[in-house]
Length: 616
Image 1 (tube, rainbow, N blue to C red):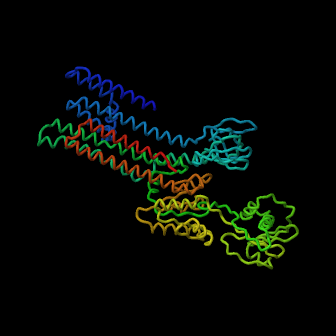
Image 2 (cartoon, rainbow, N blue to C red):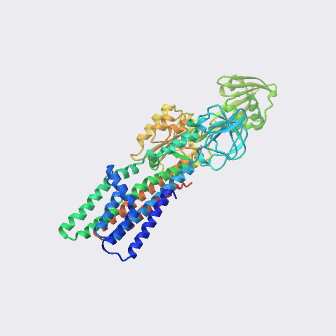
């Protein structure tokens, strides 16, 4: 509890004690009024002050004004106890709201507590603690066990396990060693690392994330805008209605005191606190819960839009596939062992830096004896020729085989990049290299369909056969291949025209090459944002890991938040609507009205706080 909240609690307790004293003492006349007035001022003096101050600022019709009118009216009709109790209960509700909002903000701050306090700058063999903003690109820093990594950098020396959960939501630590790229905001769990800084603090990952989360509240959801506009017209309207209730009926029916009392109850019931507090708090909680899961949402408008997603469009490479080539199939010719085929390919490709060559060497997995390899020649657009153990090995595509293989060769119809091999003109077989599909990609598509997403689409610049193979394995509804970046924008625009009026289209990309499409879609989601500045800049929602399964989780969080918001709106308006009618007919006394107002606010706020919890 903050110092201000403790002060409010003390005021409430003192006001309650004074009220109890007023009721216990046999006071009459002016003494009775004075005693209750003292209890009233102790309980609600600050509310009176805020109401007067806001009137001079031109902000007349707020909840302070409503409470003041209602309680002063109670005193005018000699309902002293009711006037003090109304103010006391209102203060209890305000204290609860303050505590709830503070707790939510504190929880989010704790989640995003990734800002480093210092950096251990290395200079001439000595370390000194400096502000991370003072460290320049190229300088070296030391990160000890248990410390936050203050700046993005590359490990020069040392190894350690790195806790990335604050950025990614993933609990499993990552191993870092010399050559590894590390991001600011993560925690070094063990070991000591020497890093060379690659970005200034203002451009670091931690700075960009904090800036994004801090500015998220500026982009409001439609429901928030509605509540803001609603409160602007609602409060003056209920004040006018209360005034009419106090004046018009007694002109015809008499009994001014009863009708003024009803009007005061009407004002108390009409206080819009439950809506004004709970709706923004729900979205705030939803964004905080998503952050906890490694899903950064740039504003409540995007969180609200995500709840209405109808079409999800994926980029392929880096989104549904790993973007890493890997050996998928081996097809040795008759009389050739699979291991012999792979070894020949690995030796022939031993000097190549091409990703396919690297995947072959990785699949071989053994140390290569380079003394066996001589006279390596790269044939542009075809492959490699090399002397291995005195024999000529040809490794490459069909064009290379047609030129260097005289027997046994037949083109393969395998899907992927096919590497054929021949030894001294005799066909040895072929290897098929394919991009690996991410482990949770199929599960993601299934969960999206289960969540009611009507269409899943994949756009890619890859060959049609490869694209259709991946789409078929994942169960994607439609696939468009061999697209250039501009083609992807045009295709997304066509899909936007096909969706319903309220439905939303999401595009999921890696955020680097897909920036035009990310900005054209209703909602752009960038994946694997660790280390990608472009992703954080271009997307509306940023997934801090490479896992596409975060997308259905983000949709679940958005829909849950939206449900909570709608529950609060319907509940608050429904209860208040009924209470207002009952109050107008004199069926609810002022105390009951206060209990109704505070009760609705407390229930709505408790319900809003559920949005903080991010379910898997």
